[in-house]
Each structure stands twice: as structure tokens, then as C-alpha cells.
Length: 246
Image (cartoon, rainbow, N blue to C red):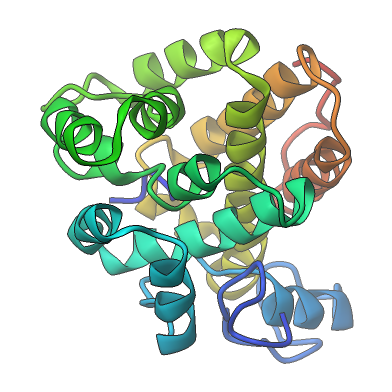
């Protein structure tokens, strides 16, 4: 999922976050060039739409009915989804099943754009496989949604039972979000957490818990990247050091 806030090219994992100036004053100062590289290569959660190239790339990987659902997603979710889909393909290779690519691109469609009704539209137009993947990636299909904490706890609690391909999409999703948070925290500091329903403590808990749930039930190289990103976020944002499986 993109968030619960209300690379060298624009097809990089990060979808083109604004670069930051090394040594810039503010939260995270002192990381210097490392933050500059993060700003170049990883996405930002700030409300920036996908580039023309990103939009074209996504549409090239979707069938006609899937493009109609894609168009219903807001611009920020579409931008984020490109990063998630590209990371999923990078992990599985060019032989990635088409349904998995479509699910990675549409993983936020039901959760953030109409819930169960949107999922039923996905099933009718795209088939049961894509709908099942999107359902598994969604923390809620109810409108209005339950409380943020209740949804996240339930979502984390069922990660262990999900198929491996869904775990990969979730890991790519969380990795993209955490790296984006690192970029945005560098620019916004503590004011960043006002944009998240879980606030600072809830957001840090969620990403640590999701990473732990994946690590406890699955083995994949992407988890090392996710753990490294979560560790850095916890350190930069001043949280306690994460424990494996926590």
C-alpha cells in the first residue's frame, strides 16, 4: 500500500524523488551524500504524480480492462505502484507471471479506491487470480474503514499465511514506502508524521512488524534490503533498534 497519509531515471524504483542538498540543515543532517543518493534513487511519499514514462511503462504492462482500473487510482498511488511493480519484476525476472505484475500495479486499487466494490470490478474484468492477489495485498475492503491500528494488526497477523508471490509484492511495497519515508523525513523532519494516521510511533511499529512477519515466514533476498531500510528508518527517526521478528 502506498501509505496511510491521508534512480538515475524516472523509471527507477523510487519514481523520481527530489534530490536534497548534502549537509542541508534539519532532521537527519549529517548523513550528507547518503541522503542525497537516497533522494535520487528512492521514491518520495510526497504528492507527486507519475511521470509520462512511468505512466507509459505501467500501461504497457496492463491489459485494456486493467488500464481502466489503473485510471481509477489516484496519481500518488500510481506512482508508488510503478516502483513496487518494477521491484517485483527485478526479483522474479522477465518471466514474472503477467497476473503478478498486474497485481503489483493494482495492489492499492481496492484498498484505497472503493473497497469490496472495486475488488468485484477487478474480478469481473481481470479474473479471479488478479483479484485474489489484490485482496491479499489489501488491509481493508470495508468502507468506511476500521480504525488504523486494528486494520494494521490484522494485516500483519495474516502475512505469514499468504502465498510467496503476494509476500514479494508486500515486501516490495514496504521497501518502497520505507525508503520514501527516509527521503521525506530528511526534508520534513518530525512534521512528516502529521500526515500519517498512525503518527510516528504507529508508523514505525507497523513497518517493523510487517518486516518481522515476512522474515518469520519466508526467505528471500529482498528481506535483507527491507530490514536494512527499516533499521535505518528506526535509527534516523529515533526509535528503538528493531528486533528480528518483532
